[in-house]
Image 1 (cartoon, protein in one colour):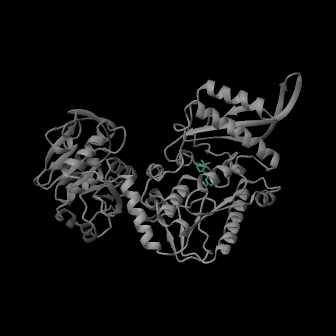
Image 2 (cartoon, rainbow, N blue to C red):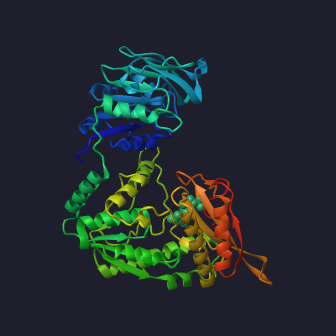
Image 3 (cartoon, protein in one colour):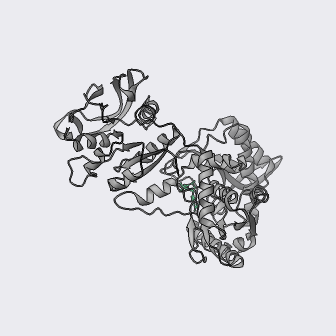
Length: 513
Ligand code: XMP
């Protein structure tokens, strides 16, 4: 890739991915790398700028992350954030005051005054609120440095050495609570590093397509398509790169939302690929007969999925490459820290290791989710797929509480469709991150017309979240809930009561099973 590059050096802080995203929002390509990366390697990548992230430690701890001082010799501008700023000072022989010896610790919103002469604060308001989170503090600056900003407690809330192009901020410009954070990062990137901003999805798509072509040559490629954003975008990219050398297998397990199997097929059948839809719904429903335990459902579906996929792959014969929809947060989470945590993806399918292939292609491994969506739009993928909310691999099977029957599946599909329609009609479909209906296993008494009913209770769930690890229930207006409820009870046989789930995660989870 010939794009300008900024390297974010990971010292173990909690906002590291966020920093990378913020840099990319300025149309500058950046990667997060470990502080253990040799300086020679960093230099050879010719970065326009380097950002040191925050970290949980004090620079004085023996175990705290430190990199070789050679990093200060390679002539690349550096912005240190929080721990990163302290490491910059420490590494250049300044002094960091320890937490227990001072009252300079700051947490949360803090007012700062900036020197707007400084290139990083150029054009900004002199005073604004920043997000602080530090115990230790910068006590004495290294030679050549001066203050560029201060708070009441912290004389060196921002520091600079203009000649060397080294800057440090004690606060976190990457979080939204820092009022001028975006502009501060932008100033560093454009005014200090001299970036031009050449990272666009158009250029990414072009480069990725060329790289895939070169790698694959005349080989055969296989992709398990779920209809989710990642696999759909990967499919579109591969299709542009290698056309009919790509075979996409879409295993329809029958627990998709109403019409979804047909929609996925319609979206892909005109692309220049071999598209195989396997209608395996009878097989899956058969396997789940009598199963009510959620984990057994997941396991059974997962295993059956792999079996079906394997059977299809065998029909195709030997493939050279298998495509995986890994995205950048997975890459960062699984491989950078001191202890490499391998995230356990609970997606149906996983990696079918028995399929006979030579190598894996991960065409999205450098992209964040929102960038994957942008790329999808760039490649001409239908809006429906680009903006699809996350949908669990086991599908509606884990939204029918207890045992699954065809009848219950029909009820849930119909009710869920109405809920989704009403959310879309209210214009809320992009602001609520995930929303769906759950068919509870509970029946209760109702009255319809002149008659008594004894039917199912349907639960509606809507959440707002950024990472799906924690979530808040969505404040859906009562009128929207009312419309959905009235329609569901009137249009879907066997539902006589609708409730809305008002628990957050934790303590609840997003799904009910
Ligand atoms: P929970 O219910 O754990 O859900 O709060 C968090 C996110 O993960 C999705 N989810 C799954 N995705 N297979 C998947 O591919 C699963 O078994 C599964 N269970 C939950 C859920 O929809 C939410 O987005």
